[in-house]
Length: 112
Length: 114
Image (cartoon, rainbow over all chains, first blue to last red; front, top):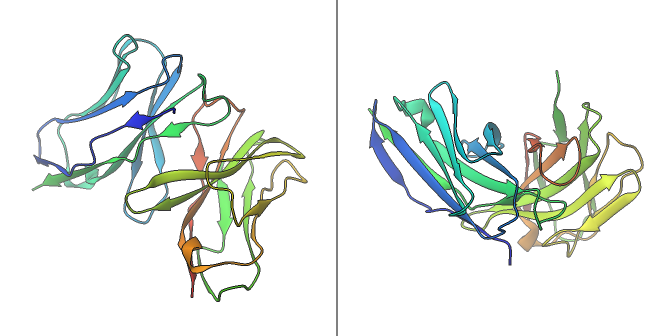
């Protein structure tokens, strides 16, 4: 069974803090990893992709990938109330064949 | 603007009345897929298509049909909707299968079957 696991949360952080979101995946040969942000009732929006071990930074967002540990994380620096959403981790390109495998998401709440 | 367009955004229907949710993308993507999203269950794939005339079942295909006659369109058909198909539906597309490029999602269709 190909699985992407995330803590459902909610993860609560104060405004201005760093939010750390984590994800593990079971398909060892997965090659591509994505973080999506989803506001309630809205569609998932791609915010980060990462393919190689290490860190990838884009503005306030940093994605981290450790293939040996089958672990992906997303750091959000200087968290804002507008960052409050559900964050979906997805893994693909491996034995999953034709589909991305999505986690169920972590709910993030940034409090003013 | 590159996008995936779904219609309708909201739909309330009665049990057994056939309906179609349309999905169209303007990015020349080969891969298209339908998901449903329910509280606590996450995104679950219904059907996907790797290219024109090539479709296959996802994890929860029962009660649904799809067709891919043109590259840009991938409609979802509910021949006889039932209340357990009440859900939030998303169409998604990608340049190719394999998940290496991520997906672009449509705005969603909230379906209620009474």
